[in-house]
Length: 238
Image (cartoon, rainbow, N blue to C red):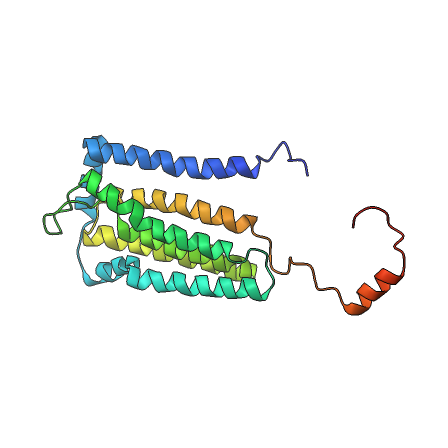
């Protein structure tokens, strides 16, 4: 099917969706490592936003693996069960892609923390390794991947509700981390970028997986018998 000249191809859209977060992440990382002007603005903004309280601590806990992980596991199990039960070809690919994205979070975040060696805010004990935010990246990937897995299985209204719920959970986690002083604001924004790239991979795999019921139905014995006994009017391969 030819692509409309007024609408860019999906491949170009995918590249743009990934390149933006990658460039922003590179810019933030450069400013953090070089202690540039953007890092100074970040520190002043943090001083204005930090106000540790119990509510912000509870919101920050939404990014714990013990909280976000089980949500993703349930979504993985349901998507795998639904895909296999509905006869989806390669039903295991989207759950596998989501699981790999979750595994990549610590694999990417931990080395970055050691390399940037950024100190924490005055609200936490003196230490380094706060950039980027692992809790934020965990929330983005876990809740985002769960939404991508469950969204196609539900009605449009439910899909919109899932997207809104995912945004509330991610933004709530981010707000709690900054408000409690666990992270600088740029730590959180950088993890948004990192999570967006990982979710773009999950979405790409999910889009390439055929919908449920794509496998051809089994041919009945009567159909096989009639087709073998009666010549087909069509020529060439079927």
